[in-house]
Image (cartoon, rainbow over all chains, first blue to last red; front, side, top):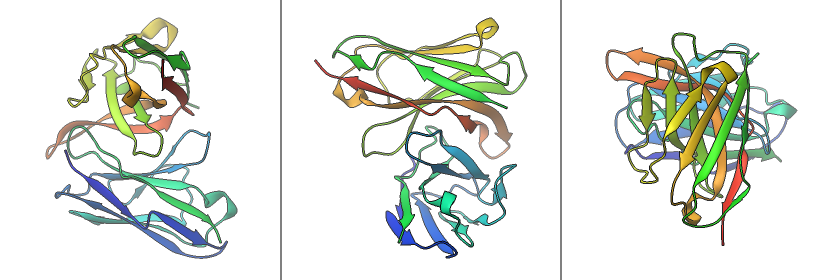
Length: 107
Length: 127
């Protein structure tokens, strides 16, 4: 199975900040990388697919980049509703593994 | 608008069978390309894909899981059911169902994209 890591595991930031979360994979997955946002007790929200394509309805302050084994999720000008946990997922090969998550909280 | 909701027992004893139901609206499993998947998250651990069923009855299962977990659909009632046999404590998790878009790429073949999720349902396996 493809192993996923994320860094940092947690991050404190303020409204208006720009933050970056990194996702690394144990093997080359081309650009088959998704990002999700999860809030406690809520349904995970699909943000980005194919490493950099924004899902319909996702604010443009979210962006993704990368290919191969290194990927980033960037959020520009953090809004109060952005404080959540973020997961990456590879869809290059079964069983389509997820990263452990990055908790983004308010400083 | 797509919505999904998971339901089932909150507490199951070891060795028992766990049956989870995903009830959904906003799409149909008669639609080409549509599917429903199950994903779980044990406490403090990463999400894990379990199974997917598509409109054409094609299924995918996580090869690492040994629970004999058939996934079935009831198209007319907009429901998908996941059955896990012989559960044990490692199956304690929040279980999510999600709308799965059946995507294709020449590099990878078919793969699911989970683009709408239910809020999840905590199942505890304990005697």
